[in-house]
Image (cartoon, rainbow, N blue to C red; front, side, top):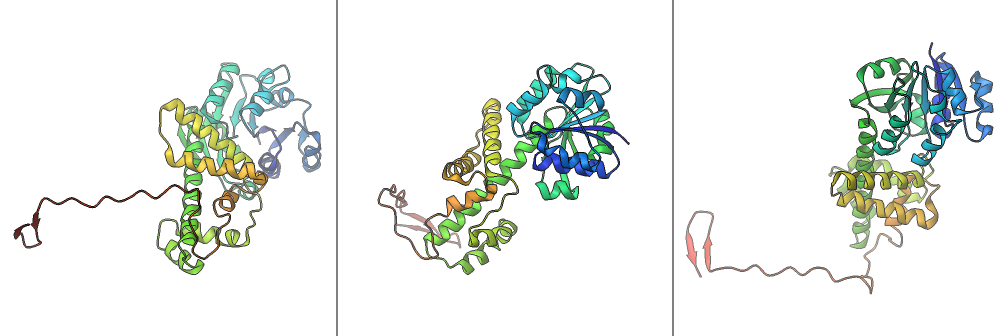
Length: 322
């Protein structure tokens, strides 16, 4: 049994804490709004008055918060995790905050305190089932030390040194966002040029998007996107991806385009829906019939006629001169 603290009891953190209690660990919990602590206390978790108190009680402390600002708020200052950290503590940062925020946390913690960055791939359902994919960055011995706790939550992939976990999560989300944007635009194109829904999905089934198309079809056709991974958090992640790419000098044109769809969907009031609601924005005003070009649409690029010099070689190697 390990003394574990969970700081941040949102949709993911609360489910992580429930699993750890059920697994027999000695769990301390803290959340900014105390109302989320009560149900966990009823299961046997111990409430802490501050993140610092939670850290002082723990061998392993998990942070699961919304963004870099929230991580800074719960770790720094007189009541933050750093104030209660000791040499016997390993902090496991499981939020999606990017490598820069992980580096800031590392610089704030006492040198003897262990730190892993271990963001997850998965949503509340996976957190509840213990089937998250955990991208762990940090020293191998720290990963081994935290493994009895992390194994309760899912499968652990040790992807490198500190910061690699945060980087891996951004890469994984870049794949998700670009794939979803490509799917939406393909369906929008199909509708625009007059393909039926049945033909559209038959074609998609023959492409690399087959699984995504099948998985998303019901939601697309119903226009309902119940939240698993809120779109507002996906938008935050897209901005983190853009920041990390800019810092590394990497040109991410497809991912940037997907990020604009997420931003537009959030501006349209879909921030509390699932991130896949970006499809609703991509497909707005599209039915299954052919569409007319928008009056303000730029003209399609013209294809220049190919130029020939009068020399033609046929498949038998015969040379013909014009």
